Length: 513
Image (cartoon, rainbow, N blue to C red; front, side, top):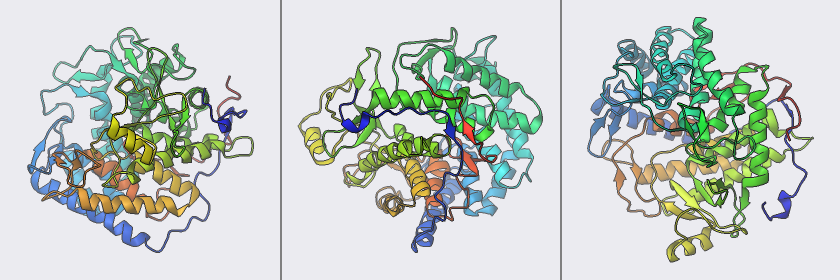
């Protein structure tokens, strides 16, 4: 158990109150328009380069000025960018993207590689359906094409298996038999679930909802190493866990993310989704929440197969601050206090510290902490350079690259919209400056190999989520808070927004032991 006394409170998340997420009357600082225009310029330059050098391919390689096709070859950057185009007002590009999408046969992969159910669904199904909604449902071809993709993804569920395989071969509609994890099998299920259920609503075809809900219910009800926190690895053939590793990071992240988002987006009468999230949050507070011995940064540790705490963090895991802040709507107002939101903000601040502490002002892929109960990470102990960095900043870097991930900016966006504290606005503005200074190539923007070196080499890839997530979260931080309000929309894990109904009075069924 954490040793810090402030953790030792009678904290139990129970059935939770609905209501508004965003701060009422939130006002933008005077510099908002300037920052918003800067983000639009980043998008414009990036997408213009994509159209010139990689059009129709999945990603631009911005250093070699070439392209890659590792996401089916259908033009993943186009599908992933469409919702951002509409939100920013790039309507000409949006219309071109609609016409391009209409020409694609999504029943045939353009590459020989096996297709990831998770990566394909969050980009193509999620991206196309969100674009359809945002544009006033005036382009039904986007729904038709999303269904083409969804029909292919359904082959990942084999026979009576509750859990889908994560990779399928389009040619023979055969899954790739392999151990999965709950980010691929479980977290992807809820990432898959949102667009698939929306797809069911649009068409009246309930197949997709039934498949996805069957899978999620299996994960919710299976034995877990910690209450409400299933093991990361799972065998789709048997439906059984493989090992007992527990984490909010990559491999598990979207499973926890979507439990509460699904409850909020659908207002389902089935309390099991909200209850599962509440249980996971309670367990995390009681078992995983730690504080660094330097500067008191708060983080959620991992729990490994040997039941040991690992004091590790990652850019991917940094979504958790925003996810817990979102609980203001469905869990944050606890017995007349904002304890859960407060913890979410502390998690967000610790993740932002990984940006503020580096030479570039950009956060690393992975890092570690030292707590009062040790420094075990499952890897080597910190070397002299890492120890000095820890003493200076309260964490140390274990993997130094930045591949255009969004999660720190995602949680920062939630923190801004919920609190109105201008430090979160300023954080986002600082990120823009760092991106402008350290990520440019001759044609666009790329990741970097070492965030703590101002002369770092570039990574020859411009991720599709640069368009879908990084630039959208930044733009919305500086945009009118009523535009894509958190009270009205829920984002999928690729930052594609979906319209939500008015919030219920409560989510969840009551106290969770």
